[in-house]
Figure 1 (cartoon, helix red, strand yellow):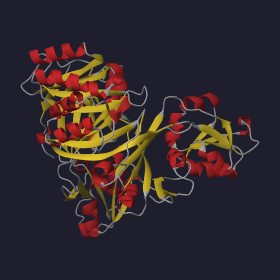
Figure 2 (cartoon, helix red, strand yellow):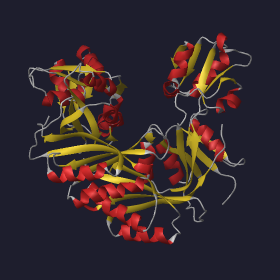
Figure 3 (cartoon, helix red, strand yellow):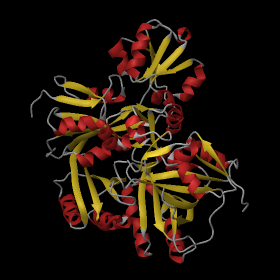
Figure 4 (cartoon, one colour):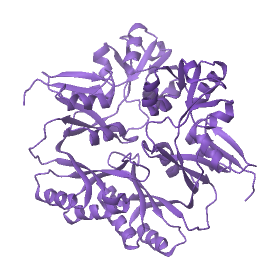
Length: 278
Length: 278
């Protein structure tokens, strides 16, 4: 595979998706900010970009439903996954102290995730359309501070006033790296993701599928249902398991399951990457 | 139970939640619009309202996650469920024709659900904060039309220019009626909903639970996972089944399951109501 790659991510700059893509991308690749997740899948599917980094699940909010729905629609493969701790910081211009600040600004989601901290410091809060816009505002106003990812420090030349101000410490987001190519090589630490729809659309039929995994001693790490959009009560299931599709027990399980379901789509076998702290 | 009840719903007036509550409420009850779903649960739990009607699932969008999360947190019971077809209409002032209209306005979600129709008539589109606001605007401007529920007709004295203009015809929303009281009487057409968390938080452990339902010949109609908010990979499961908790096989299954799980919460046994078309 060529080293220089165009890698898509969910913009704008300064978001946790931006921080995520910077953690895993090669230095000689170029990263491209997209306005929405579906456009990233479209561009990857049509070959306009080589890879993409998209959020798939947050430990507090749950699955990123747009990503799940796009995985079922587009012909792309998961080639890696990693988790990023969502750590918010308060940043302002250089040599500014918390006492100088009268306004805190950020995206409403970041504000919501730091509610306890904000209440403790009694400042005016301005919700803005993105953390990037808030950071630009702070660059021009020494009495304002922005809540956001540590990416904002380098990107906008700001300084930390306070670090790790989020209300919940176990807030992490799982990201996947996507490609048109499959990840064919196994490692010691792989996962496999599939989507399936049951014959007759009886959710209880999931029992027969889970039985196959149990018989092959495959550990499942996630089971999630999404509407098939064919009508109420009609679901597709997203299942994540430990192991690579080159393993015998996974081959056996998926072969058996294929004969028991309406549709089976393999989203990929991929390595679990560990990324450094922020 | 007293006949006069205060029934909460997700406002503002003119939404499909408003249409839904009007379908099931007694004439002598009073309905109260709330700004958000969590506030409805709070008011019901604290006894400020007697019942509530909340959306729980849409056939296209999937579960209403705020409702699922609130069901796990608050001490309330599901006492009935019903489905409402999401049918959009174009309404304007009396004696106005489509040719007189230059602007179509509505909430962005309604606009998104009628995209094909809107493209076919080539009018300017204005997104507004609610269909109620859009309807009030149309009341004052004869060259504007609003997209929304048939409730708008009576509520704002408007007339239909076109009916059923939604892109997808199988778009239905499932609503539940909530109460502090349990629905103790069974009917011929009941469902039971539970929430459970697994010991050790291995999603594969769901297999053992589904096995119990299969052994008791209980039909499951929905299985959904949500994050427990304790950390990545840690889920609670929402399971809906056919039948009432007074049935022997459901009692047996839930007794066995209680010994196999970390936590089990019964959200209610309730009748499936059929409501008329709109």
